[in-house]
Length: 254
Ligand SMILES: [Fe+2]
Image 1 (cartoon, rainbow, N blue to C red):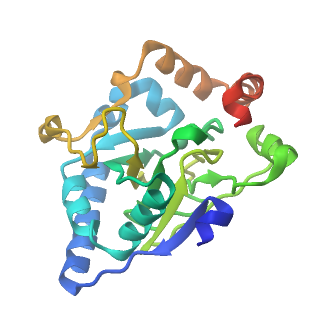
Image 2 (spheres, protein in one colour):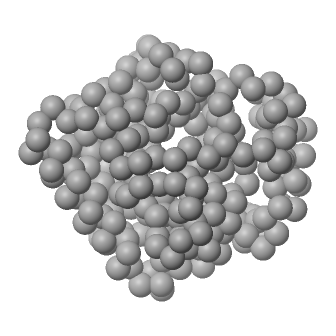
C-alpha cells in the first residue's frame, strides 16, 4: 500500500451505485453553497481564527455525507489501514475545514502523536489546488534535514486534489494549511479515524450540531486563540519560534 511508504495516498472516490454518487455530489454542492452564503460575520465568529484563515466548521450536511461514503471503497480502504495498524475499529468524526480568501501559511505541525496516531480522509467540495490552499504535507521517512527544512518553511510539498479524489493521511505527518489566493472560500471535508480514550468505536455525531453550522474557534482555550492571533500577524516568525520549541520537545522528535 502506498500509504505504508509515504504516510499518505490519493485515492479516487468511487461509488457502487450511481444514485449514491449523484446524491454525494449534490450534497457537496449544497454544503459548498451553505459555506459561501455564510455572512462575513458568521465566518468571523472566530475573528482571530479567521485572521489566520483556516477554520473548522460543522454542518448538518456532514452527517449525510458520511452516510453516503461509509460503505464505499475509499472509506473502507482507509478503515482497513487503520484497523491493520491498531487491531481495533476506529472512532470516527467528521468536520469541514474552511480556508478563507487571504489566508496565510499555517504553522507546520502534527495532528496526532506517533504512538496514538489517527487517519484523516480529506476531500473537497470543489477542486483543491495550490491556488486555493492545497495542504502542504511532508511524506514519511524524509530524514532529519529534510524534515527540519520543511518545518521551517524552506521546503514545501502541496497536494492538489481534483474533484472525485480523496487524500488519506496519517495525522502524525508534518503538515500545514496553505494560503487561499482566490476570492472563493474553500471547504474541505475531513473524516477522522482515531482511538478514543473511552474505547468508543464507530461514527460519533454531536447532536448539538442540529443548531446549524458553527465554528469551533471559541471552544478553543484562550492560549490557543492567542497563539492563532499571534501566528496570523507574524506567520514566518511564529513558525520559526514554534519549530524551535518543537525541536526541543520530545514530541517533535517522534
Ligand atoms: Fe493539522
